[in-house]
Length: 106
Image 1 (cartoon, rainbow, N blue to C red):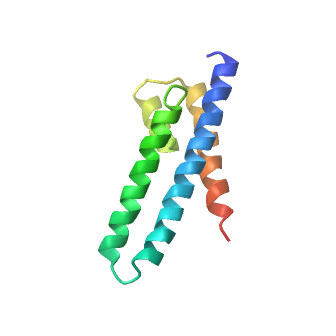
Image 2: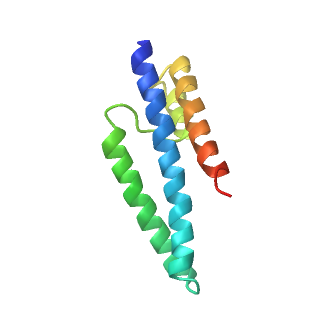
C-alpha cells in the first residue's frame, strides 16, 4: 500500500480511537453526575452519548479509516480484508490512541 495513504489511515485510527475513548470516559463521568442515584439512566445516557460520538467519528473519518479498535483490525486481517502490514500499521495507532487518552485522566 502507498506509504502516504497508510500514514493517513494510521493517523485517522489514532485520532478516532482517542476521541472515542475520551467520549466513553467523559459520558460515563457526565452520566454519574447527572443521575447519581439511577444506574439504569446512567447506562442510557452513556450509551446514547457514545453512540452519537461513534456515528460522528465514522462519518467524519470513514473515507480514510473507521475501525477505531485494534480487535476490529485484527478481525479484518483474519477475514483477509487487509494485509498483515496494514493491520499492524492500524493496530499500533489505535492502541496508542486509546492508551494515551485513558492514561491522561488523573
